[in-house]
Length: 180
Image 1 (cartoon, one colour):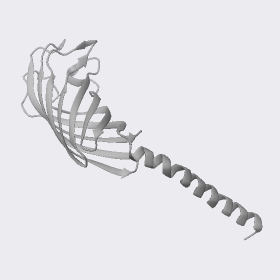
Image 2: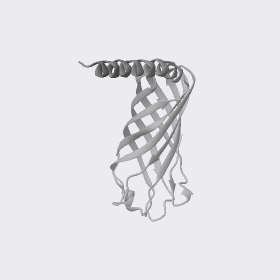
Image 3: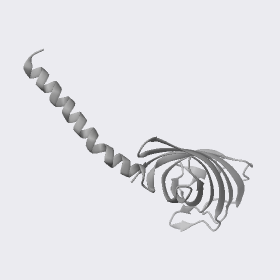
């Protein structure tokens, strides 16, 4: 090996070692952070058949997920889910903001409340949710959250939906969040 190649190889290793040394304190600070934000998806299935044939009885929604832990075992989660296109035959997507009270760390439980937002209006009824989940820290600043939810829904006051829809949903969700 020539001297130039050896020097380049040593310089590369030194640069990598320096980058790692600088990244470790940043990752440690993020690992101790209380705030997380990321993206995920929910797959839901309605437990009862809807009278309105346009109502989807299962589907996949994308979401933004955030969490703030006040203590290692108590915090709040905030999510904003977006419905799939053409959901219940609506022209615009439905957005679902929800707030969860989180108890636990790796294995956790949640109690949530939320609503639906469509065409500039909030739906009249709130939904309530129970959640059980597993939040795994894969890297010091990266959390993968896998959860199962039971959501009590009542849909009323949606424009262009003929009947009020009253159904409970089972939801399997997953999110990847970064700590800041």
